[in-house]
Image 1 (cartoon, one colour):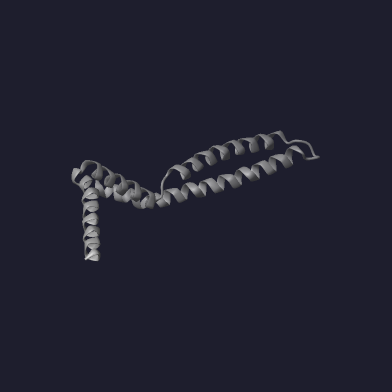
Image 2: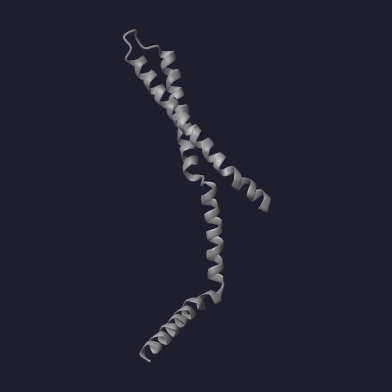
Length: 126
């Protein structure tokens, strides 16, 4: 994928995630209201209006599907900062694994510190 395309989608991730969250909250509210109205209709002392009850059932089904899809979208679409971390971290780890000279740094650092400490010990003993 082209770099400008990647940057474009990187800048849109937070908006997409926010849209899924709005859908999730809206469908949850719709689901909750549908359950309340359906319960009120079924327990009504005037008798059950079959057409209204069927419409409310359809509304509950639609809200449930929208809620499930939007919740999954909100959960699995990472934020912009998460994507930056994933990309930068992945490239850094790949670089560290492929560069053999980086493996020498810990041993060289240990030798440098050991030599410095030995020099300080020798100075203190004199």
